[in-house]
Figure 1 (cartoon, helix red, strand yellow):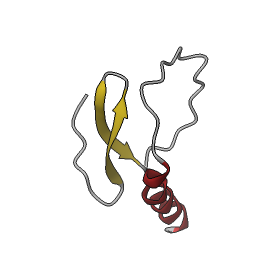
Figure 2: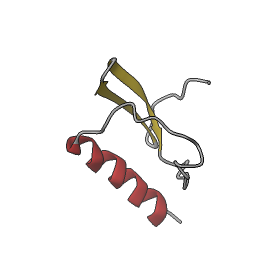
Figure 3: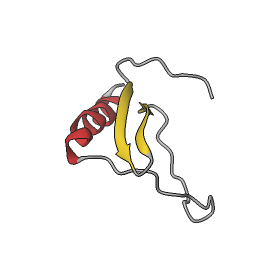
Figure 4: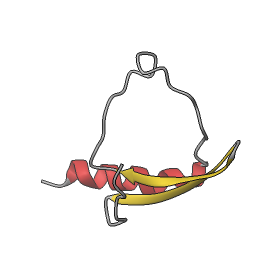
Length: 66
């Protein structure tokens, strides 16, 4: 998978997981509905509540932008 350069709609994220730290990028313009049961997902980590404001503010701004 290609690296995503952090910018206004690509937010870098690091979370503590059972196997150490997991890091990646939230691509806010790629909002998708994913059927987790059909994809046989495995939970790797959970976001802290402090991570949500930046993500939700970015999503709201994208939906309000016309």
